[in-house]
Image 1 (cartoon, rainbow, N blue to C red):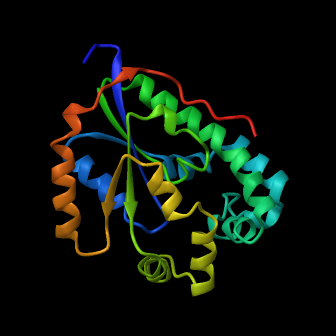
Image 2 (image 1 turned 180 degrees about the horizontal axis):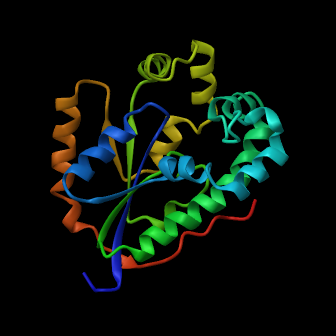
Length: 212
């Protein structure tokens, strides 16, 4: 691989499909993994962004200490598609800017990016390989109810806000099935790791969001 090339591998999947399990596995193996959701959470501490969100969604999204209450913000956007689109237009550009900074400044030649809405924001062309984690909807609903303390209705709303599994699977390079136990998933990951060296890198290109 040339010095000015990097392999960018996308990790995506529906909410509660097991993306973090897969990402953490690669991280333990020593690979650089960038987590888009973690960047999003970090950015919610940015004063300018908080001001923008407050202006767009009102004071009710703030906690007493002035920080964004993510649960209240989620309640607003996941029950109204227009509000969700508004939030995405605010958040996605700043998230992508930070992702670009981390990719550009990293010396690593193989970089994993875990990003739930990879297909929704049409950035698949920037990846050398896209891994999709499939998990049946009923399992995901149960996970959300247990992990996030969601009601069944809330869990279904979160899942319904995303593109369908089939559409994403059709656009992915590799499908990992997370519908059994951890041993089954990790066996697939081991097979996949053996193929990573075959991926062809490309010159570093900034991810650019399409105009909406």
